[in-house]
Length: 272
Image (cartoon, rainbow, N blue to C red; front, side):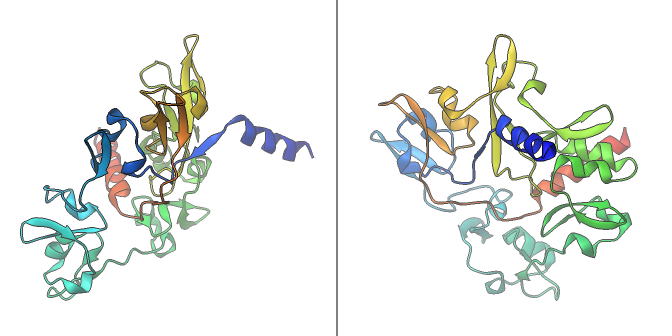
């Protein structure tokens, strides 16, 4: 009974808010909030959605899963089998595509963590999320404490790579807390660990009496509401409150961007 009560207390004492549901442009009431996101613009006292795939960069366009970079411009993505090219050409069109025959594009298949061997496992991200070699098999990491089960130098490295969610404490990887943030500028939020490095929930924080403490949306102000909630809440200037958006859920699909960044950091750490 004591164990269950302790678990309930720990959940209640750290209140995470859902950040999967993002605000849509026409919900935003402030020009400041509207200008924070690349897909919105402010016009005649209204926040308006920018046309899909109006991205100029050939590097950024393929990472938007609803876009494709073709013939020097970013256009609406249809399906991988509608495009032709070798492996590098297909992957330059969309992060979702690759080529095996060197002639036409096809959907990129992301292996499961269980498909990787011990040598490769800790460098990879499977279709379930970030992988770790735990209990003699390659499996998805679901929380910061799972990283402690990885053997060798990868344990500390993986904890450091998940810096927005995890921290090393007494040689152990644990979930970060607001109290771990030591200055007012960084005291905004803590990501709950997410296998794809796309946080689904965050713990809000606020600076109070020279300490960073847990917060709720009601504690946020006009400047912090939209940004600190990862664009999931908006500031209502009429009621002067931070309120949850009603936009459609739009969780980002799994991609390899998170693992690319983590591997880059790992290589840097190893080289030092």
